[in-house]
Length: 124
Length: 112
Image (cartoon, rainbow over all chains, first blue to last red; front, side, top):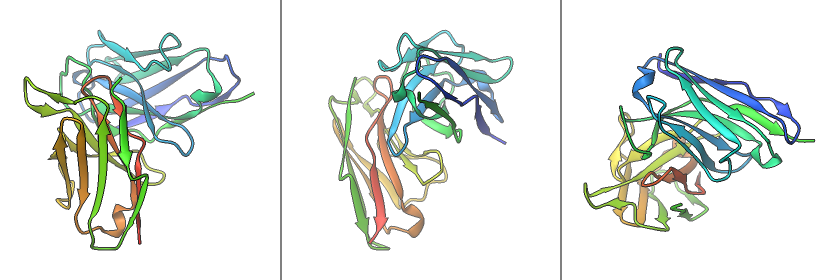
């Protein structure tokens, strides 16, 4: 079955760190760019970060640049998001999402497969 | 960033009637070298992740009912649902991918 399954969400204090993971199955993971998209409670979608299929290109939203690091392990079909210096405004459900097209070299990503997400809450 | 806006924020439509959602980008998302608009539409139902409906502004994703259609070019786009069904109650988002992805704020569709 084609699916994405996120894990790693937690409740933590401002300034803390956390790593999210996304396990992919049912498709050739290394052929597709992947992204993290978050959704704050009752709010809309915010793209956070993306990575090319080979892992050689990464992009970040300005709101997380310098604090978050995206990576992938194509041998384990896993996408990761290392989050440091967390703030209250980072509170959200974090979804991993797969680009629809194979072997996209640019950052023109749109998403045909989404995970259900993992909750990150930052609060003192 | 290319920022997206949507209108209306919400709308209520009778079953079987037409729903129209507008999306506007702060800059053109038409890439002239291939004449493609880098614009996608998603549907999100409560408690579910988003579902891709439309890409390249007007290409329907596989399995999406043909009552959903996308149109527009440059900076102005429309998602139309012809013959609204009860299962279409959801929030709809546009997203540009001309630069790093950016979503619109969403439009909530309900039954009148």
